[in-house]
Image 1: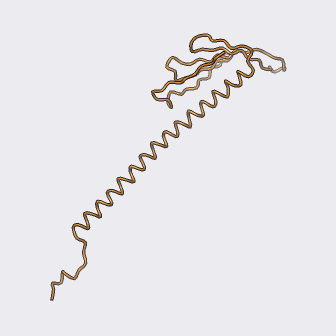
Image 2: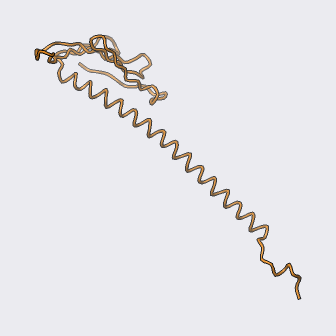
Image 3: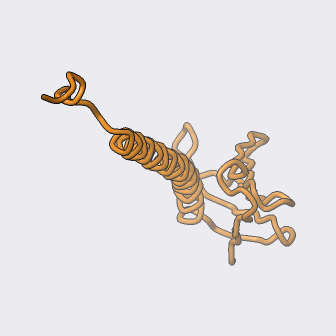
Length: 136
């Protein structure tokens, strides 16, 4: 008759090592998938911010250009658009809107009657530069 230990079921060392290797591989694969999805999420967030800023800028620019009477280039990165709009008494009035691209090509600033609005693309562009020009 055999020894009492030979009838007991147990894992061998090889089975334990293979099981641990499979578990470690699954954990590594899971963490890789999570890190890739986080990177894509950050990229998607930046794309959404860029597209929202761009859409807002283009909406205002198109509106100004539709009601424009004249467009002048003030400098290489600055343009003035004369627009006609109705004031409170429903009479047409002329206002001047200045669009200016910053020196680092990451911000577009509009100014109307002393009010300044800045479209700041610097956080979403990284090392890229904004290509912004108005052709009169």
